[in-house]
Image 1 (cartoon, rainbow, N blue to C red):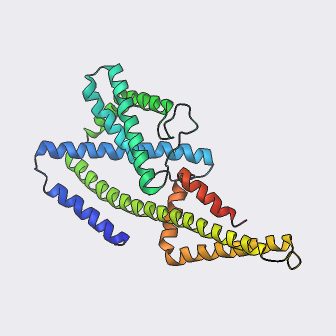
Image 2: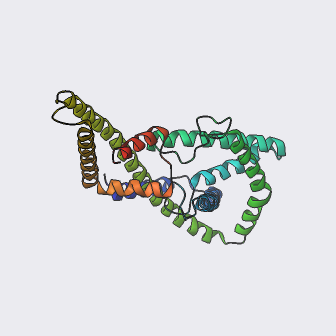
Image 3: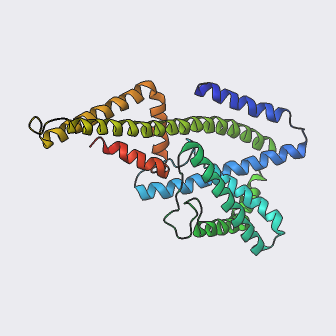
Length: 291
């Protein structure tokens, strides 16, 4: 199934699901408003992340999993915080602690799933003391708690107040358009991330093949008289042979899957240094062969 078919299937599934939901005006309003919150806070998160990373790298980087200006983890985190307020019964300390626990758990699950599925890390806290496998860390959890307080007592009331001035039918239209757009964008991004995973797996496989080639050439050297070939000549020949094998593999990968190569580059442009630990080493080893 190609990318176009996947997108069409995803959108059809979404429409089918909502078409057969038990309809009521209150449910309709509830879904519309909370989807809007999801998109608004996903956009705010994208602005924050993109500004931070672009400033650090001194160039514009469209940060995040998706192409468009949305970071769903921030949107999901905001919804968790909004719902956490209902559990805390307006108790500030309880709300702060619940937000930390829920958001940290969400971040841990998201990180584990995405690296397992795509072989990509979209954040890495391994340099922060007390981290758990680089997915979560105490200072970041504290940040979620502070963010929850700011959101709950300042940002969210303001946004809710602004939305109350907009006729509901316009909110409904905006939500529908944003949902279709997000579904398409997410599906494209999912396909690209899976192509990056396949590319990294191919690189790991090529590393094994190149190692076998080097071992074979090393074995050949043992059978060659020192009078026929010097160590320097042998080393040079080995480097040429290895580089030729690498270039052949790269050309083969690009020729067989030009779209996959393009997709992999798209993901890495949006997320510098996003490859998981295992594949970072594989990629370094792969590039080392070309020197």
